[in-house]
Image (cartoon, rainbow, N blue to C red; front, side, top):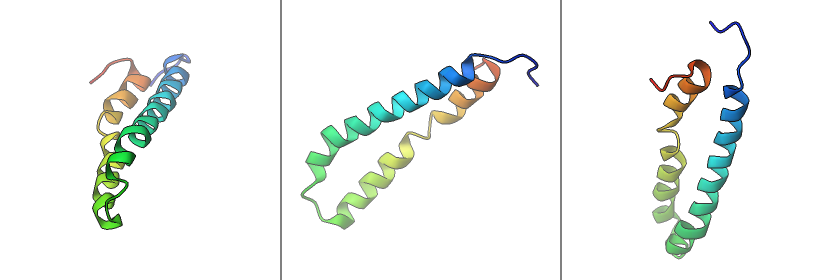
Length: 71
């Protein structure tokens, strides 16, 4: 357990929010126009996949925020 405060957590939260904002803008800018004319049932799996894929690197990132190590 860490005894001293660390700057990694506030910086990590800011980095995470920035990355999610960029990811959302990229999806809205490039993916939405490509699949916007598809039926809703065709768009749904794409948006579900894109909504989950950002979670993949999150575990290691949260470990880094807490411990300073990537694994």
